[in-house]
Length: 335
Image (cartoon, rainbow, N blue to C red; front, side, top):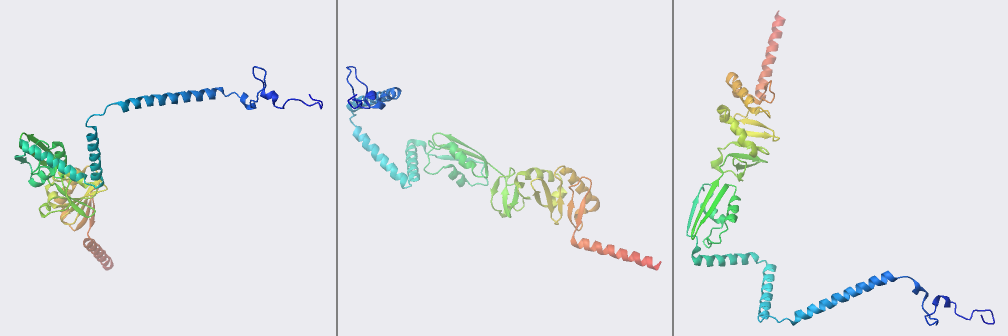
């Protein structure tokens, strides 16, 4: 202390400490905070980055000292030109034209080597013309037998709804055999007011009806094209009904109604259709049901048959019943 009882050293001297020689130093107070682990991790990261940079510099130096091939400049220029041309083709939307040109050039080269298609054998075509089959298969005047893709050609042919199957055989050096199996027109299918020609498996063959198909059976309703073959096979067992049938209507994709030529609607059950048709044939044979003035014959219930008369027949029946009642009243009054 000095004469005024004051400390003759700085306030922070106790915190600043002394060095090994006993001399005070001005080290900050926060230097005593333990940060050893952080400082060690930081130093490790710095050493790793430095090692990576040294390795990268070493390999870069080796690569730059490697001798370049003699034609490296020519190859690089060619690649640059090719990339520029390809970018222009893609941006200009000329890819299809370039591919077509490449195929024509390839086929021309193959044809010059003796692989031109000189003879074509085609069997099985009736509904689809020869020209349409060859064009679809890609067999043109410029096509070569060597580069004709048989699998792709068959896939394109099968995309035609008339063609159920196709086989293509290449006989080198210049012969080609094609065999197609066509679907047959089976019925007319009406849905949403539109009529189409369908095959037995339900495939739509034509979206319109030509005159030659008007004699085919007509099926109506959603899903009728898939169930028509089975139902019409049952109807064919009853020639009398088949001759009167004008349309078969699938209801809710569950059961069928028949519209006969005389405008009678026959409602069939979901199951046991043969039994219902047997009853209908029997009623027509015994009571001439299908030639009477009726509009609906309901066979959906197994224990009864419901018949709806036409308006004229119902009116005539009502008048007859009324006349009979009047006659009975008169007889009762006379008595």
